[in-house]
Amino acid sequence: MTTVLEAKHINKYFKKPVMFHVLKDINFQVKKGEFASIMGKSGCGKSTLLYILSTMDTDYEGELYLDNKLISGSDSEHLSYMRNKHIGFVFQFHYLLSEFTILENVMLPAKKLGEKSYQEIEHDAMDKLKMLNIEHLAKKQASRVSGGEKQRVAIARALINNPSIIMGDEPTGNLDSHNAENVFNIFKRLSEEEDLSLLIVTHDEDFANKTDRIIQMEDGKILL
Ligand SMILES: Nc1ncnc2c1ncn2[C@@H]1O[C@H](COP(=O)(O)OP(=O)(O)OP(=O)(O)O)[C@@H](O)[C@H]1O
Image (cartoon, rainbow, N blue to C red; front, side):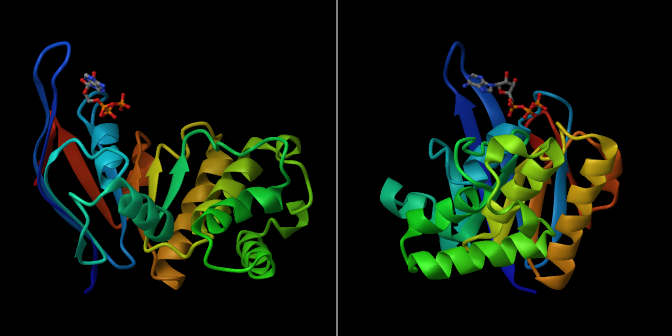
């Protein structure tokens, strides 16, 4: 099975206010099409780890591979390109631009990548909205759709560049149980039908129990 993401001997220290060894020799892989969740008590290092895996934090020791390419140690321009092209993000808060339409919001990461024409990007964005059954929202202003719909738009935006992996930091944290289940079902479908990998930090045990694998963290370590 192809490996999409691999962390090797990741160690992270916060140096202030006092030296703190926050991540302790983290090793794991995410395979193509795998739907994995990360769980652990508050403060165990989940968000710190996700920041590193998503290439937003570069101040750590160890090696990180994305699609079998070593990306730790790359310059910020290359990391920004790799992040935009290969990783989709879904956060607890949707971070949509409220003055823009839903369609414009979904198009943004592809415009930033700059590899396709406006028409192609618009077409791709409509495809993603259709995939998530929200194409009727395309022309609506982002401020005028519901919380559950906003999170589905955020997923469409995360998919626009056809990433290898979706990373989520509590993507259902702000949703009621119905909308949380909706998001879970979308992720499950993406993993099963599109062979997309997903790595989702969650406090929701019901959500995690339904994923292919739970990566349990404790005190900066992964429990085996
Ligand atoms: N910039 C920082 N400087 C120093 N310590 C930090 C910094 N950011 C986080 N920490 C500490 O590192 C530890 C891990 O934090 P992290 O946010 O990764 O935990 P978490 O598992 O995601 O928690 P939660 O479930 O509450 O979001 C915590 O003890 C936190 O206080």
